[in-house]
Length: 120
Image (cartoon, rainbow, N blue to C red):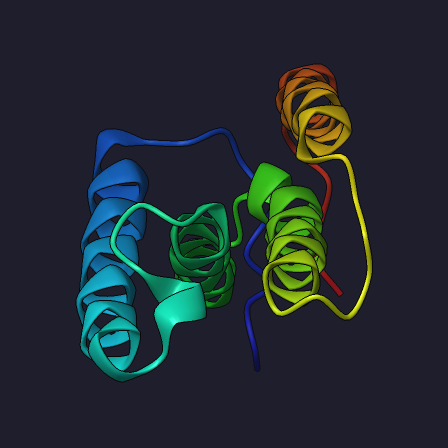
């Protein structure tokens, strides 16, 4: 019989796992950034890709509800910044950050409000 793990609020172990996964992703993206200028050291795209990868890893392992929301949000934001950096689209980058911050806030509020939702 398979046990379903409920989505829960972040624990210190989940936060450490997310941080470690994000740090490893940032390191790999740093290596790519040596050869592809769009992913340079402090680019928003690289940082957002790294935290998105951390969220996906955390969701797969710990089923934290906010990572199910923020992972795609960070990924979409990273792609937006990357497309802007390579001049495929023109985006006012100052308009993207409020959406990221509001999305993260909503994700944590949803997790706080509904901490015991079961994962299907």
